[in-house]
Length: 235
Image (tube, rainbow, N blue to C red; front, side, top):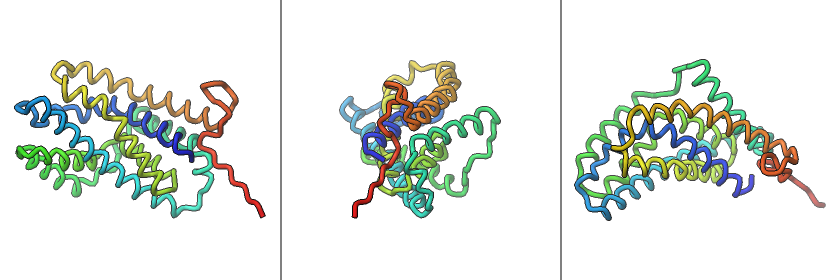
């Protein structure tokens, strides 16, 4: 899969996922201990937080990409845009239509993380925000599960890591707005954003499937082979 396509899909998924982050991670971001810091210190702390979070995402992406590389389903790699689009549609049906709450939680792993986060929130060292972001990236999240499934479908450890890195980058703008002006974001507004999430994910899933089909429709489904691998052998 081309680098530009990994950047496009990963970042857009993160951008859409940030709608979910505003509702779910927003309270944690607004609770970051930056109120008493200078403007420079605040931005440094937020930068460290997001670097830590993207690092954990990238490492998870490398791990899942490596696992995916062990499966001989080369059609996934050749039609990755379509595969990821289908994954997004299945996610919408599973979570929002059938309203299944049977998401992987592994509470025995997450309780120590939450405990450690509580300790880090009490530290005044600005570098603690790096660890806060890293641990936050390991907490249970449906959108992260969706992105990791897509990283698995890349069947490549570097592409999986890059995909998750771009996913994390895509979540930054909304979370920065929450951190800086979260007090102006009412709970009702965040809930409205949450209600729009399945619409956004479903729309992007349909778009990715259409683009992967190379229908020759300008902008919507151009015949450029997004997500398709062309293999040629010369003797």
